[in-house]
Image (cartoon, rainbow, N blue to C red; front, side):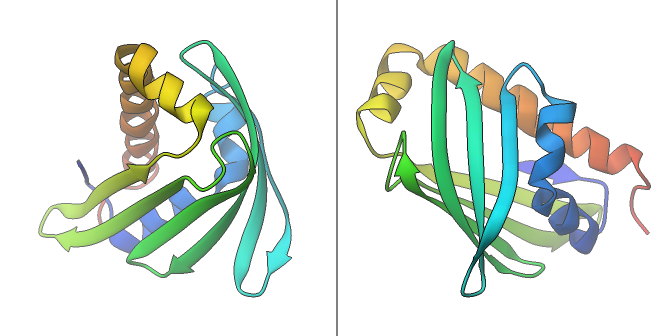
Length: 140
């Protein structure tokens, strides 16, 4: 959970800009490319490095603006894994919560053998990204 001093709509918009992740965190995100649509969901190709392990996958992203973003891996490493971002309006801005349900051997290894390093990296990305959002205008 992370409190962000920015309006919920702004935080939501920033989380939707996945193509910017490789520029902001090149040590983790090699590629995040929106390649199409399936119904109302975006299809995104991902190439990432977590805890020294390489992950390539395709995910589908469904949204309920400005409250929720659901991402599910449909092909590649971690197929069947899901991540959900929920955004709640609070007096100081937005509370962002992220839940992950990892699937597959690669994700199980990451969670068991490299958990500490993975948790530090994901915290670094999440905290850093929300600071970028705050610094680009803050609450209105």
